[in-house]
Structure formats: C-alpha cells, structure tokens
Length: 411
Image 1 (spheres, helix red, strand yellow):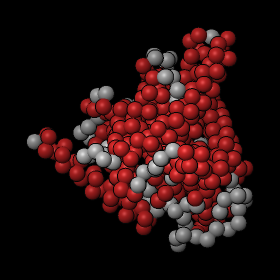
Image 2 (spheres, one colour):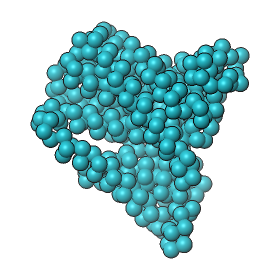
Image 3 (cartoon, one colour):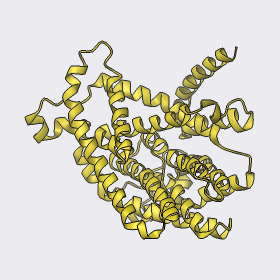
Image 4 (cartoon, helix red, strand yellow):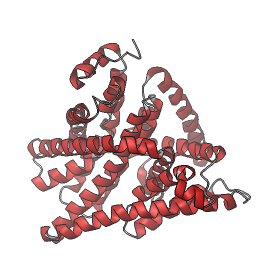
C-alpha cells in the first residue's frame, strides 16, 4: 500500500505541476510557490515525508536539477545575446550580491547577535539568487530577452560566487588568513578551468552527436554527457556548474561559430532533442521544489522567522541594485520584475548542510535561518511578482526605481 501511495503521489504531482503552470499564466502566481507549499505540508507540517528518507539520492537529485537547468538555459544563449547581456550581468550581480551580503551580515550581527565572522559567512551564503527559481519564473513572466538573459547569468554566477566565497571563508578560518592568495588563485583557476573544460566538451559533443543519433535510444546520451562533464569538472577541482553552463553555450552556438562550423562537422541539438530535454527539466523542477519544501525545518521557529525577516530585508538592496544598473536600460516592467527576484535555492541549501557537517559553531541555528530564507525568499518573490503586475503596484515600482510608468498587465 505504501508503494502504491508513493506512485500515486508522483503521478499526482506531475498533473498538479501542469495545473499550476496554467494558473501561473492566468494569475501570475508562480507555480513554484504551490510546489513548495506542497512540500511543506507533506514534510514539516504532517511529517508524511522527510528529506532523510531520500538518503544520498536527495542531494544528488538537487544537483542534477541544477545541472540540467543550467545546461538547457545555456543552449539558448546565442553569442550576440551573451555579448549584450554580459555587461549588465556583471553590474547587476556585483551590486546585488554585495548589497544583499552586507544587509544580511549587518542584520545577523545586530539582531541575532551572531559573531562578525558567522554573520559575514551567513551574508555570503544568502546573497546568491537561485537559477532553479529565476529561470522558469522569468520565462513564464514573458520578460524581454536581454533582461531574461541577465537574470539567468546573474543567478548562475551568484550561486557559484556564494559557494566559492563561503568555502574560502571556512578555509581561511581553519588555516589562517595568511593563505588568502592561494585561496584566490584556486578560485581563478577553478573558474577559468571550468570555462575551458565546458567549451572543449561542447565542441567534442557537437562532433559526436551525428554518431549517437544512430543508436537505438539516443535521447538520454546528451543528458548523460552533461553529467559526465559536471562530475569531471568537480573531480578536477573546477566548478561543475560553470563547466555545464559553458558546455550548453558552446553546443548551442557551434553552428553559428565560423571557425568551428567551417572546419569541423559540428552540429547542435535538433528540435526533438531540445523538446525532450525540456520535458526532463520540467519534471525535475516539479520534484525539486517539493523537496525544498520538505527540507524546511520548523524545529526552531525563532531562527526560521529570522530567515523570513532576512528575505524581506533583501528586497531593499535588490531594488537599489536594479535602480543603479538595470532600470534605465530595461523596459519598466522588466526592471520591476527583476527587482522582485530574491529567491534562494540550491547553493544556500548545500552550504547550510556543509556548516553542520564541518561542525561550525552555531551551525544548527544558521541552517534554520538559511532554510527560512529559502522558504520565505520564494514567498516574497511570488508576492512581489503578483504585486508588480497590479496597476497600483506598477506605479509604486515606477517611483521606487525611477522608471517611466509601465503599462499594467492586470487590473
């Protein structure tokens, strides 16, 4: 009976995910919010499921979701779009990350009385936005191509920077600040090496695609190769997420790159392969947000609510960053929606678990704060997206961001 109930639950979640997408298209209430709430009800509220029941499969599933979302999004980034989006990405990601990290660190130090080092570490962990939330949300909201590309790249880079800086701070605490030049060198090599590995893998796979299409069941070969590249990059101490992103960008551009196109028989994914990959990403996204909901911990309500307060405070530096870097170049509606984006996800969840594993002082409390920021970050983002779609909400965003009055999408 338990097995039958599990199978029923899986099928029901898939149907509900399609229903929530339809609701999203009509109401602008993000589908990820409903999936997250289902996870909360099944997990910390009713205790029907828990992340512990998934064992080692749970963290692996979360990583697989991130990897395929980054790869699929990278496929759509043409060179010209990337060139136009990169300056805006660097400006927005720098301003937003620094502002959010500073606000979280200050609030944790002054309100929660955390030591300065732990407060700074918490700021770095919570500052990065989640591509697993932002990518499907930006697509569903019908944002402009350039703004969507900027938000995607910003979230991808933000996750990487959060992980790298948090690991660097932990390493410096354990081994002393005299090692910071070596830590910085490892970051540069890991980032650059990931780009080179991903680009080379993209060219190699574009050459192999013609042969794999002659196999009996070729659709899964590309996702399998993506996992190989991610795992190889991580084993080589490079950043797997950036390697996969570079793989997707290169594979999506091989037919538009004269040097590769004219000298090698390189091809990109065809429509059938792209549609199949999109279906996989849809399924993974569905179960990912349910799993995140399961992971929210209500054991210590004080720290959980502190995470909620931090999620609300993050809106302030986010709006400031968008006003400084994006408001004058993006359409007013796009700028308002970009200012709403404060969701946290995979990187923060991984680092929260790492704090506990390394027995950092106060790790249990910080983990609850981080999970609170993840949960309430999605709630805040969802509420602001709906608010920005109303006429009076659009007017308020126009004043806060200093943009021309946008045409409302809802009344």
